[in-house]
Image (cartoon, rainbow, N blue to C red; front, side):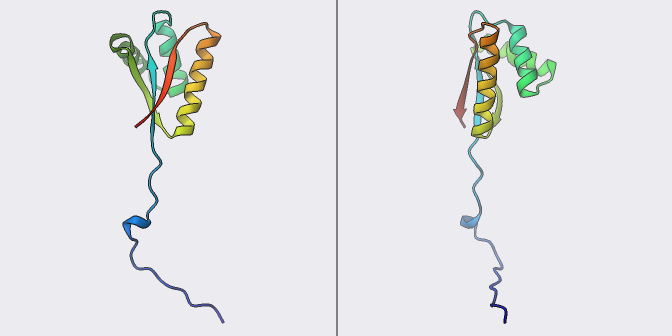
Length: 101
């Protein structure tokens, strides 16, 4: 004989899964990293268009930092590490941070 099943007619809001927190990947201005390299990083690692990458790069140059993207923690951390590694290979001190949203 099959056990009885309970049918739930409505889902309580507190029973829903919460969305995971998001993290911003931020690039910071410095006096040595070329704007061309920053554009290259934004296109390569953050899949920005050339015009969007140039716009973000200008913002980084003008105000000191710029948002590269918003991701889950693991993805944001991986992208920040990729950027830092690529910058070090080219001898650039480009700083990339991950910040909670």
